[in-house]
Image (tube, rainbow, N blue to C red; front, side):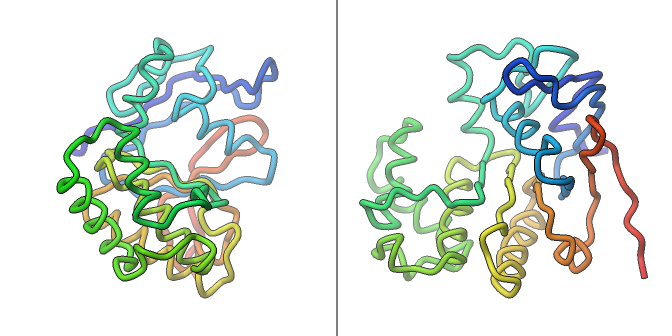
Amino acid sequence: MAEAILTLQDAAIYQENNRVLNNVNLEVKRGEFLYLIGKTGAGKSSFLKTLYGDLSLLEGEGSIVEYDLKKLKEKDIPYLRRKLGVVFQDFKLLPDRNIHENLLFVLKATGWKEKAEMNLKIEEVLDKVGMKMQAHKMPHQISGGEQQRVAIARALLNDPELILADEPTGNLDPQTSVEIMNVLKNINENGKTILMATHDYALIMKFPSKTLKVEDGTIFEVVQRTV
């Protein structure tokens, strides 16, 4: 049986002093692909921020990639984030350097030293998202969909155990969104666990998978209607 990569028990999620979510009980198994849906402002981003250490878990129990979220210290956060890949809606590429240099910056920041190893790793992750030939280009020279592919490649650099994607298709047109979903699904089929926040219901219908809903201050699994 697949082991749990993320568990929460009776957890409350706070944004500053406001309780955003309450009584969250959740288990994500290694290798799963899950959607996290809910209206804007329902608490999806606060939930994800708690998972990657941006917000503290103040109530309840939580464990992610073998880190205890309740006991997480400031000094642990960089190590936690090496085991997580985070993909944002707005790509967050550094505009003053090319694609290869963007990824090199992340590797250096996370402790890589060997130049040949770094170059090899960058080539490998760009190849996985179909961007190997664009490594010399600047972010402004490629499309939004291509920038998101690079952002996914960046999330793969440290071979994460879990990828958290926060509205990764939010700024993209429908066709490009489908292309990005195909990239993410392919990564999932190769063994990576993915938790993706979205409110693109067309995508969920096209790529059905286990779905969690954030509503009325808590999170629960919803069963998708099949036509």
